[in-house]
Length: 565
Image 1 (cartoon, rainbow, N blue to C red):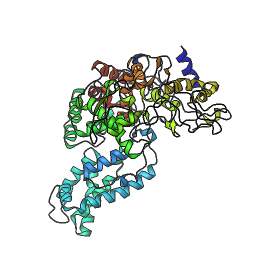
Image 2 (image 1 turned 45 degrees about the vertical axis):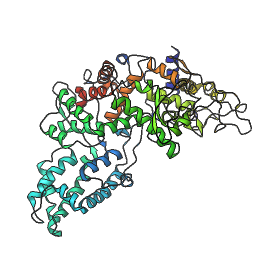
Image 3 (image 1 turned 180 degrees about the vertical axis):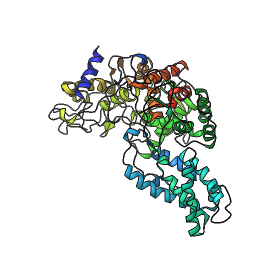
Image 4 (image 1 turned 60 degrees about the vertical axis):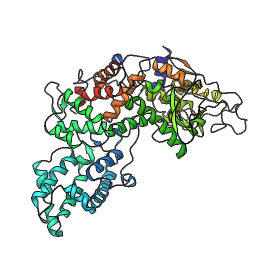
């Protein structure tokens, strides 16, 4: 009951922190935080109820612009390594919420058009400048500048790769006009250049557009074409375009049944690109793709967490929950010293036990504990919000500046005229009526991790940092490190927090929900609930195998459908 009251207060106030930035973008209101099973309300459930796809759970779709990562991978698949990272960064930056492919955040189409023109010209010029690459790209030997047969063969093949579908007859005829450029330059490859630049600026190259066809079994629902399913699979599992084998399956109509889609996905999961996509999903979700530490320390922290994901999910295919259960971690001598663990020989890295350090699993990693590092210290509010939003899928709405009381400043930690001790300073959050509900959902969680600084190093005393009163001495009270998940239980440190997370049904449901968001490029809504419930049930039924979670998501009939909008 207390938890429901806090959630109601939080929604009513629309406040997530008097002094903290929002790491997850705009909230849409809290999801369940009362331990409900997915069937009665799950992570991110929207009040808008199921529509025409009530039992199926098909959701909405929209034009999805290729992210910078997807664009780079697509150009590489088509032309090779012809663009640099700096080149690709001319495209609009991708908002992370926490994933970088949410189509609701993709605007700036004018910048896309201008950058696409420059990059298309650059990529084509570099690809055709290399005779060997040019020969492989064209795929036939032109018998002169005006070899229409060779050009059309190139257009058909390259066009299918670029647009992820066969070109129509009218599109082929239009691109055939490129022969005029070849005639004027007396160079067949001038026509190839025109075709490449045209296709790399095509809307259907830059955006994934899913039209579909009416599904007679589900009124109001469209069934994706086989080529659209191929693109959904490829950009989800590889963050790259479909390969020739997948396009051939689409052309043969072999991506129509759940069994066919599952078989295609199983092949794709054996590709190294799938392993990298799984790694990146976790890095984006848990916010360690970019870290605030020095380059040297950040690299070690990411290596540690990547090693755990690699070992548990990819090499040994253990239950996904073992990411949180692990009793050892992968460190070199410097990172072992950073954590106070047994050190491997200099110049080597190995798995070492946590022992009695109070650490356990991925929540003990500095890469994850970096969440909430702010103004030279840690923010209990941000760490609590991380647990609520990323691990429980509970949205905490952003603060409305118009409702903040006098003296409360956004993005500044609380201060006190009498003490620099953080527990007392942050107690002010609970005294501000408009913000108390939200902060009581977040701050108690964050305080349970206060013995670990913003890079995961253990500490017993608070630093004097932002929010401190310069006229007062540093806090002399040792950090208690006592935390609480409202409505769940109390804990002390990451190991005990892990026990609370593993003891409920919210962590695994949220993991499936986060993967759904990554796959679909958007947050879930009410009509998605039946689909998501089936995926969560399959995840649990598989013993929490992450590969089975992926396969359950893509082989469900709803994956290959969308609402008719």
